[in-house]
Image (cartoon, rainbow, N blue to C red; front, top):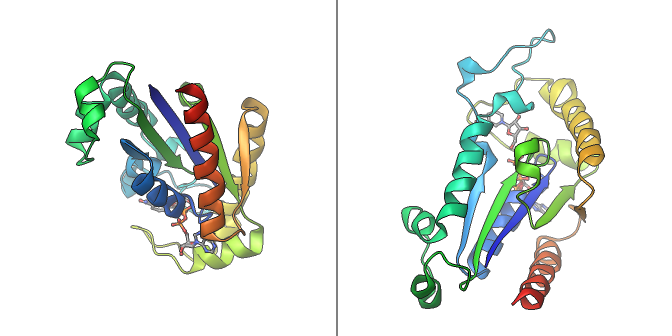
Length: 202
Ligand SMILES: Nc1ncnc2c1ncn2[C@@H]1O[C@H](COP(=O)(O)OP(=O)(O)OP(=O)(O)O)[C@@H](O)[C@H]1O
Ligand SMILES: NC(=O)c1ccc[n+]([C@@H]2O[C@H](CO)[C@@H](O)[C@H]2O)c1
């Protein structure tokens, strides 16, 4: 059985933290990080506001991302091996047929805003944060290209609000998580919920 879990959410909501814990505990679990598909800085458009437009779908090579997800769907065993994920003996034995469980986590801030990806998810989680907490957490982070002054209020947060509205209008299967809960609580809620789905489908 193949199972794809979306972990979306606002910047600094805790997507990577949650994903890394699930990767350690879910069987035969691989990951695709949307941030790995950012275009090079000189390919990122500069807006009328003077900011490089990082927080829009065109800043990402989404075709390549979909191609990577399809690669996993076609052969999860090969995908796991080429990404250094160790598989349980059962998964290896059953290869890429329907008998072994194979899980893919797709993690990122705009994973529900690209039509070709929306239908691939079996579960759609989304972590939210209030403005103040998001801004505080973001101010402690340094990306490959550090945020220039004013980027959060001038670009990141307005784009978040816009994309969230768009997501809500085109996907009705989102399961919202409160990013203010502790890391342990967020993990437990999601892990137990996935476990239930897997048990019901097995
Ligand atoms: N539940 C939580 N409570 C408090 N802090 C958290 C929680 N989850 C994550 N953090 C902290 O918030 C910061 C961002 O976490 P993380 O990198 O997991 O977020 P993210 O959503 O992947 O961010 P981005 O995709 O914008 O880079 C980190 O410093 C992390 O330790
Ligand atoms: N990973 C990167 O190359 C990069 C560069 C500049 C900005 N970002 C930020 O990453 C967040 C998504 O995780 C977005 O809010 C981008 O602003 C990422």
